[in-house]
Length: 340
Image (spheres, rainbow, N blue to C red):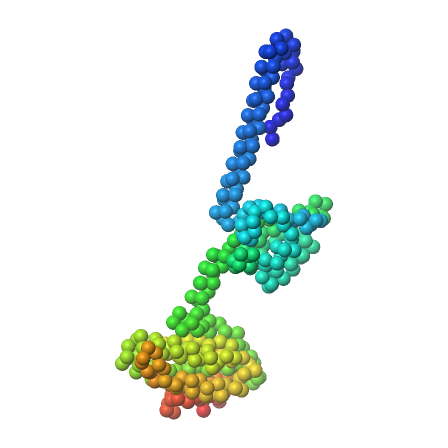
């Protein structure tokens, strides 16, 4: 801030010998110089604020603070923009909390309360639904002001990370979802299988694996072309999702091979589910005026103490037995080492 206008003693002395007009001229010059300094300072502050607001807009972030005694909120323009609230609108904290989606709000309140108790800041990602109906993700960086070890203010930065979340979700989708059918892919299936495996031998099975192979798919693919084959795969996936509603996961694990995982409560119903799968996939597929006929064979293995690869090997052995018995049926792997 510029120093207050001051006239040195020598200048006062000088004024006493000058004419009144000359003294006024010198005083006017000093005042104008001081005014220029103040205007330059104000221009500098305005420019700094402009740069800050422009940078905030580019980074999609805003500054905020909350007085803990009064719960009074203060927002920068960028924060108003994040929440789709008109700039300068009087803020009521209870209203702004209503913008957060329920799960995010519960997490925010828990984290904020703990931060105030421990007198330290936090970082949190939260989901919003703005008054204009825009869904956004924001990252909240918060710090606590604690003079004398008593929190009096919480403040920080909020940044729009919606695009980052969307990119992350897209990457997750590509890593876990089969692009053609929309089912889980082999990687996702293996991860889920590992979660269900690991029980002690002899104990009740923690789940069941059904391995499904499409009968007649190769003939469709070879004689009618890959487009027809793709149509069969997509239709088979949709039928599996409809039939396997209680499954832990339905996945495409190979070219025309699918897998279904059942949690422990549904292990005993695995044979009945296999029958429904076979019935559903044996129905003709009609797409764009063409009719395709495929079927399915199913191998079943209980997850009773084996690891993921072993469970898959057992289900594959049962599937091989089902195909060997004429297809269109299922077989269950027995722990004695055979399928029947």
